Image 1 (spheres, rainbow, N blue to C red):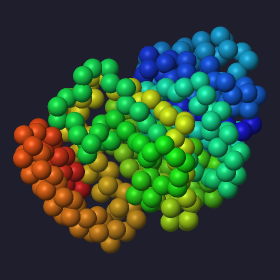
Image 2: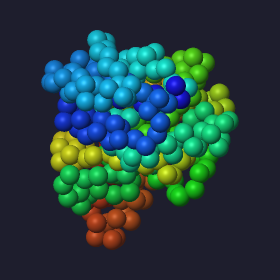
Image 3: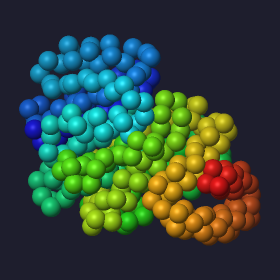
Length: 299
């Protein structure tokens, strides 16, 4: 088994169905990949949705597991433990891919046998018109947008991807452990930083992250993720998550993060003035709102 596609899901039966629909039509050899769905206690019909796909596609290796411990980190760690492939391809339950997605990843790993970690582009697909306040600086927060160009490259240490658009050599988890269960979303919460915590661990151990441009992932953005309420909740959660992450490392790491927050305030004020001069107040105001919420959560 070469590739294990791990999809962790919570209470999203409809978008999950779209995710699985894009995976069951892959051009990659069926014997060389599996689809592992980890259901994190969904109260909806997720189990039935997955079982229907298993019944309708008996030639594919689709496996379903229910993870009773609540939280995305628990679910991902369960997926890692159940995966049988040399590489683990993580996808979120609101993402879709092209039919040649897995084939392109397999070709990359064949051509770059030294690669252990890969990031894929994320293309936002809006279900409604994006709000005026959305800017390049808030786009990734809301949509996960990630684009490092059209060429294969090794990305910088600060350009770590989200787990939902990353592929790992399975051995990495045996060497460096899994996702921190104290971090990440649990149920309907929007906490995070489990990605950052794990990727920083890899980077500190010299693992390089490659960028593969011809394996894009499409992230579907519903209207409720473009509201003021969601923006405030997720930006506050960024700060709270960073507090937990850095304090779990050391008191010194936490103080360094506070110092970096002061620097980021300076950059945010400069960008606010920039947008103000361009008569785009809403974009600038959202940057300051983001910074304020992060700082509140951090402190």
